[in-house]
Length: 218
Image (cartoon, rainbow, N blue to C red; front, side, top):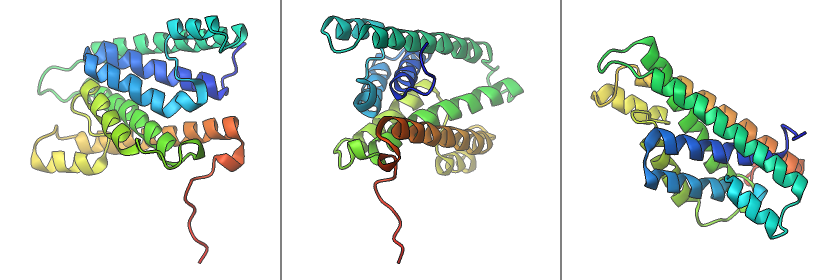
């Protein structure tokens, strides 16, 4: 039985989930490719960054993964695909009438802010605050590409309260953008921080889960 706290399986689930979501929600091949790239950047050092049952099968045939672990990877990837289908159906069925700010629009916008902020923060935290990737040269590019992939998928979202405030006051976003962004980005960021802490503690031990930079005692 796969462990729900196994770092490799968590990474495979998250990477596969967002790859599937971007494919079905955006229909944008570039956004999908970017999503795969940033998820491999963020999770590759932990799980190998498969996010694809065919890749897992190839790793098994090459002798790079055991049969038992390969099956667990397949379960995690399949579960992610099922969750992506559920989220897609919720997103599709909550499509609002243009200009009509209803509860459906609020819930849709909030969902986009939570998922997009989670993905963006997950990538940034993995690349900037964990020891295995300390000093990497891809942090800025990966963060920008993560934003591109998420904004291409969740159109109208901000993933940043400062951006949301600018949109609200300038009239370039819907009126409630600041509220949905404040709530959604807070939930997404806290969830991402929790997951990254869990991954690093389980994968490397508590000593390697500490931030790269610590505040000075002086």
